[in-house]
Image (cartoon, rainbow, N blue to C red; front, side, top):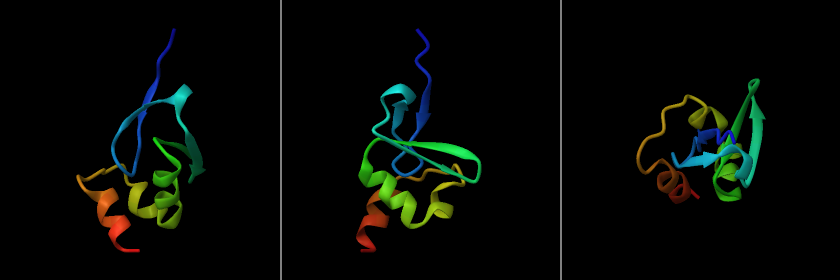
Length: 66
């Protein structure tokens, strides 16, 4: 059984692709998310997260902007 995993670009959590609660395609790449909350943050500013550089606290900083 192939258990491919990807990193959530918002919070950095490793997610099993087959079990990802949410995903989206952006700039010809599929991004997987641990929750709809992370996907919504990505949707608000995809360029911030699509760089592949997940920093600690990015998710909480993004949430504090609202």
